[in-house]
Every structure is written in C-alpha cells, then in structure tokens.
Length: 235
Image 1 (cartoon, rainbow, N blue to C red):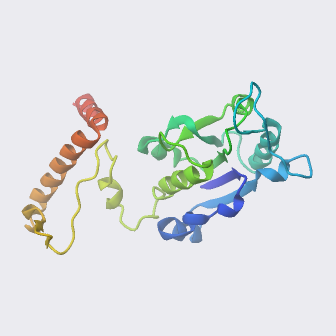
Image 2: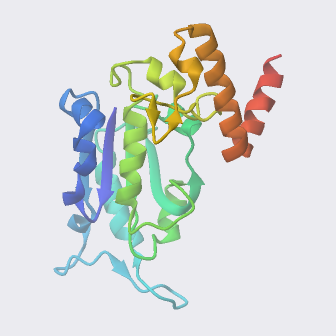
C-alpha cells in the first residue's frame, strides 16, 4: 500500500505517522509514504500557488493549473484506477466501513487543501472525491491525512500484533467498543464490574456485548439503529 501526499508542507511528514503502530509498520515497509511539494509546480519565482477568489471574499484559493501539474506528477508510477481524494471539511465524512474498503487499494493519492480551499474546477475535472474526518475545521488537509493513514494502516494484515483487537474495537458491526478496565480493581471507591473478575469467559462475553449495545444506544443512537437494521437483514 502506497500513499502519495500532495501538500504545501512536506516537512510535516511523516510526523505522527512515524511513531507507535504506524511507525513500526512504516519501518517494516508494510506501507509506503511519499510527499510531493505543490510549490515545486508553481510557475513563478515567488512559488505562488494561490490567488484571490472570483466574486470576492476572504482568503485565497489554491490554483487549478498548479494542482493539475502536481497531480499529473503524482500519478506517475500509479495505475489509472488509483484512488484520489481531496481532504476537505465539505467532503463526505469517512467511516470505518469506508476505511475497510479503502485499505484494499494499493495506490492512494491524498490532496491536502489549505487556505480557503481548492479551485472547484480542479476537483470536477479530475472527478476527485472530497472526504472529511469530521464536522469541524482544521488548518489544513495534512492533519486529516494523518488520521486517514493511521486508520488504514492499522487494518493492514500483521500490523496489529493481536488480530482480536480489530474485532472488538468500536464501529465493528456498527457497535462502540465495550468499556475497559485494568488494575487496581478498586479506584476512588469505584469497583470493576464483578463479572470481569469472575474468570467465566461466557459471562464476560455476554456482559461485553450488553455493555457495547447500551453504550452505542446511548452515545451513538444512529449507529445502534444501523446495527438493529443489519441484524434484521441477516435474519
């Protein structure tokens, strides 16, 4: 799996990706990461990549022609059907299901927007899918790309030491992960649920499922409804 990142700040990479689980995976070459500096494709000495918006308004817009040159360069060595995404707050919100599908792709290009955004013609001309990590604004797409890459890499086979971790995590089958506890068994007069200390694996499994269901219904009712709908579909 290889990611090519189009960015104005290549020095930000690998950044947090170079640590913990993703860092180990990068060193073991479970995935590859390449940054492409959009400024390298500017056509003037000032390395300008943006301009004022037509119709007026605050901020600057990243230019379509410069981005096109950068994208053409990024596509070299990749197949025609490689995945191309623009990270934008106005994009489709990514989900765990989206990540599971994306991780089957071998070649991914991520375009990190900055300023007030990207000239829409570039997006339309290349039929680029805009994606978002949430309903909030970040300083740039680089931060969102870290999240996307981390979410993908941890699903690559053999990246996580214990495959069971994936099956019990939040969003597996639309459910949030059950509540977790560790030693000591009593802290601030708060006790760990007795069933978790019982050693009875069947009872523990039942408790975790019940806890997961209750937690999802309370915190993310929309996910709980999806779980119920999917369960009915399988009957």
